[in-house]
Image (cartoon, rainbow, N blue to C red; front, top):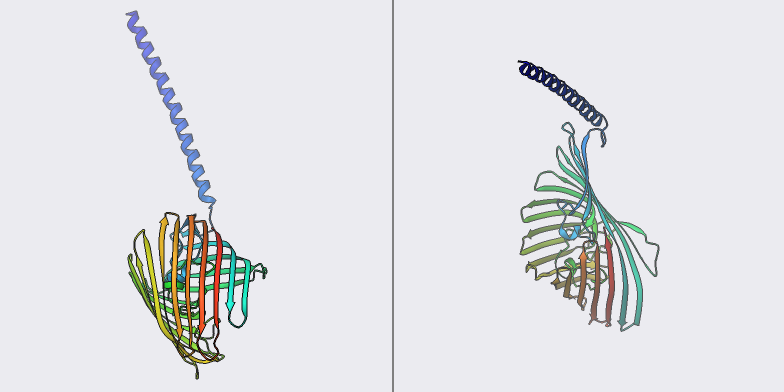
Length: 399
């Protein structure tokens, strides 16, 4: 009887102890929950991004493809862009993305000229360039709106001032997923992004005038793109510097159009440009074709006809050129280009050939060895031939 009594007293004591321990655990758990709620409330009360936004991200990736701009216009030696994205809260109208990239380039260049009238001339110089690209876009209630800016400064051992110029100042409005309105300062829509000039890596070479040379222009452009097909029309300033289709007028307008196809193994482009001015009309029509041979090589061809007007009169011309690029390894490739242009009325023709070897181990570094030979022959009444040889060692540091 005494043993049973002691057992009952021990069980009662154990039960009381267990209840007390559980009460302590519940008290601790309640305190932890209250502390967690306080921390969450504190974090919500102290936002880490500007008012009205909920998330800010920074990362690296490929540059945004600007609607209505050709691949040639978007090309740059810069590596992957750094992207800052601000995502809105539920009551904010849009999200904004800002990208930037750039590079610094240094070239040791050699130029040798043999002119029938002037004589021989040899020169070795160091050329430098700095470029900064910036793209900003916002998704709005009426479609994507954005701007692209490109600042560039150039200098050499002769001129080390490095004047900074606005190489691209472009704005766009994607009115629909297919239709885009753009404007500003950019390459001419009449240029061809294939062949000797349009497809080469060439940092120091590409001096032979064996293609259409439209230059950049202030313009308004309407572009359409759906799948691999794209098209565009533009009104351009016809007095832009560096234009093959130049004008003696103080004011002239150029009209340009393009139809392009961009596939995995084949791409093509048909472009046309017409300059309208009193007594000074000119045009250019060009065709470009590209063939991708997988990881082995690629071939790019271009050709066209045109008429240029300047203070020497009207000159009809035609041109044909091509470029072959061969992959030597995962980090090296070689390029070879050849081109010919003939000014029929001016009895002048130009022949050019170029080659380059490039080492690109990472996105941030490119080293190239380049050479080009240009032969200009004047068979008219003035006579005179000119041969020029270019060679350069290029290094490009990108970010």
